[in-house]
Image (cartoon, rainbow, N blue to C red; front, side):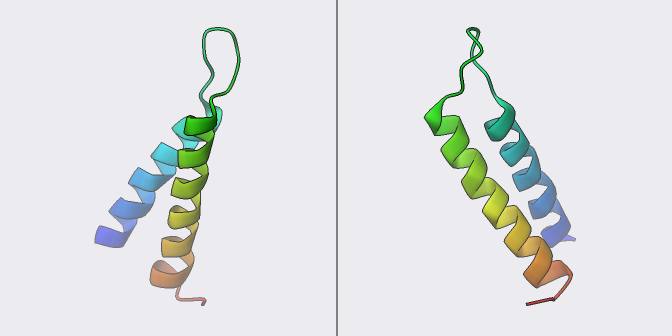
Length: 54
């Protein structure tokens, strides 16, 4: 259950970080960086801990 919660939270953080735009429509490097890191953790926990593929 804790793994599913972790995947959900990191997925939301990744979604926000990768789709965030300023008022001018520009992306910020900090949001993209932390969104990409959160996506990596989300996919890693999903594949290794939940699906046990790797």
